[in-house]
Length: 133
Image 1 (cartoon, rainbow, N blue to C red):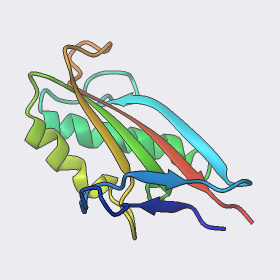
Image 2 (cartoon, helix red, strand yellow):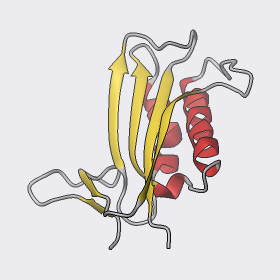
Image 3 (cartoon, rainbow, N blue to C red):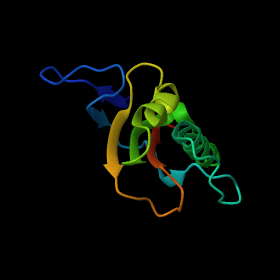
Image 4 (cartoon, rainbow, N blue to C red):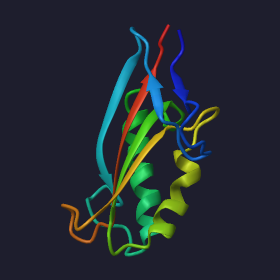
């Protein structure tokens, strides 16, 4: 049985996201907690929303790869973007990084009043699933 990402009839079709994911029994699910655009010392990498977004996804990639999975295994992304940040720059910088071969992952995005890391304008979290034989 495969992991399924779907865009059901009756819902908007988008190349950027799917609406539903089905992970079969026996699959390994990996959860990545919120990642900001910070370097390995915890310092915010830039004031630029796009640069922070790319680094946040890179940090998620590092976390995923540490347990043997990758960005292509992500079935769901959550993005929190500071309400004063340049939304187009932040999302535009990572849209291709969030994509995967075949159906796109689920994506939830929210504009927020603030994030826990001072100076951070984006935080991403991810859920990945793989079938290991």
